[in-house]
Image (cartoon, rainbow, N blue to C red; front, side):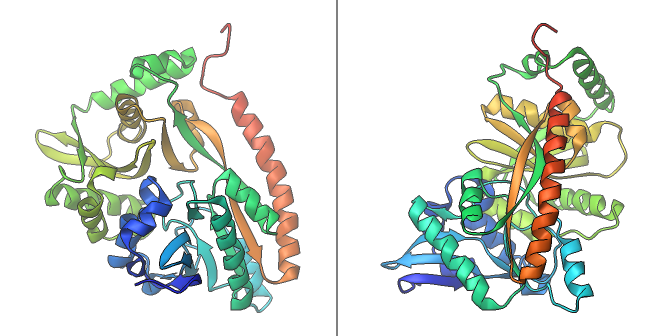
Length: 378
């Protein structure tokens, strides 16, 4: 239903037509109405799981001008920007850190626009209105994770503290095929990748790429078993439900990718990706048995091959993982923005971030010296 002109918080994506939301969000897979609504509709991101939807929107003449995925969070799980120490400091001083305001794609560390809109002016107006709402709400803080560089500058100008991080992405330099990509690497890395692919190939597995239309119920049931097994091996609980994957495949089939590995027709491993016009995004993987080097093959090398074949500009390998550097992914700076209500804690966080930022700068310099790519005249 249309809203009156001005700023509104929405308790569900049901309150805004999919076409209106998508007109603001653009083509990135994880920001679509289908993706975010599926998280809500399948019970993965709702009040019961500590992700209460309160999406910030700016309306005019019955149409949203700008939107911000926003949640009232009861914990810090599923964010990939860690503020547990900040929460602990609040607790030790007898204060409540939770609930807090969080703008993010739940369980998804994919960088991209967070202030969605057709114009810079409307997006900045929404940022100002959201920040004022946070001030009036009496919650401890507001956090905006993995925004664009432009948005981070707006957030800094609005008084938010900027935190820096790093991910590892593969960039397509117009490679003709995987061998062409390998030729761009130095000898040691090229040799290592070929050895790993050969070892993975010795398992005798057949690989199948499927999109949301091609994957059937058995495929998704098997993949969920793999996904849950990976979490269990790390003594954790899956964030997503079986219904999330099947419903997303139905509602967003062209942006879902499932890679299955089979032996004699029996599935033994799977990897789940998102895909849009620009990039392939690695998300989850799992296997029913331990097969050396299969993780690298499914999650990195096959993904790079797929991106080359489809003419995609990049492959994003997810959060963290310095080992990705040796496999052709490069360090990419990320950022998040934070507003802390209590001035004492805001000053303490500001000092912490100044030190952390300096350390991150040195870390990025170190990573750039360890590039896997051939240097000129080498």
